[in-house]
Image (cartoon, rainbow, N blue to C red; front, side):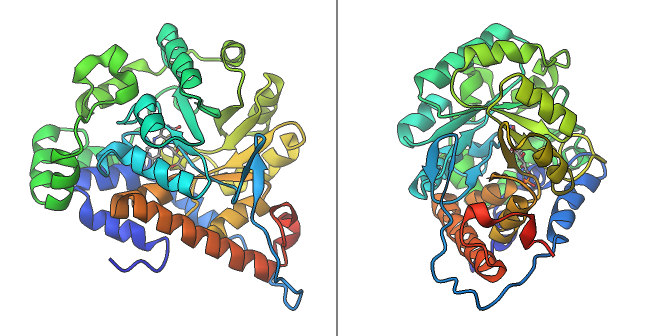
Length: 376
Ligand code: FNR
């Protein structure tokens, strides 16, 4: 596998994964307009090239929520990561921690938070969805506290799951899905051996208390459909705030008014995100939504962003648009699917190098110097 850029991981992941998983990762909602715009709008952001400014000493280090880190980069939450590589969440968390970065574990991960904390101790963040069963949410929060999660990422842009048409075509859902997945596994033996046979159990670790041993892939899809709660409202977040005294980060903000609400309930941070174009197709890309949101709330909370970030250059672009930190989504998932822990390590090295080049040639010596002044 020759990897010379972050984009190569996607091709390698495509070759290795059964199509139902590749398209689950790669696809978005409806006609995938927002998915495309996330990437296109970000790559349209032009930077000012500045030269001959003695850029020998530059530093990429920063701090988020009081924790020092070598780059303003976090691995964001990805559901069923352990289906992409054997106990995938652990592999990704280890790579993140080796790089000194936080790993965010999804509510709907394969490995439970307890399993990840044990196998990959380090700055793990925990992502929580709004779930109908509030007492189960309370239990999950208690586990997050017990396991020493360093931040809670509360995802609010999934009151209902978005329609992802690719999933019906690929065998992730739709007619004869289980049989089609078996056929695809047979024709992708490297994945079948690594994950299908040796990566078991394929249960949703965090949901075992409510789903029991039957928490497999079909249960996952069913659970997503029936357990998200469209009745959630800002007032409910007071309850979360009172249950969680660590950093609280609201993920899925795309509008300055909502960002102000997040500040008003006492959130410590937000993630400007459209869930990687997987929820409401047709909404703004994160790159376009970010500047107004950052202007509205940056003095009151930490503004993070994701959706469309595929390289270190994209990280710098998001920072220039007003983010203080960036979450990777598909970027790390492709790298993990392609190369496991080593793949994620390689990705993070590439991202660091690309950021360094971008900072050197825009004249930004530190993360704090990356702002709109570097935009052309
Ligand atoms: C996600 N995302 C996500 N977000 C979340 O809060 N909880 C989750 O369980 C998941 N699961 C998930 C699975 C897959 C396969 C993808 C691709 C994404 C959204 C994710 O955290 C992030 O917001 C997006 O991936 C960002 O967009 P890019 O960078 O992938 O384009």
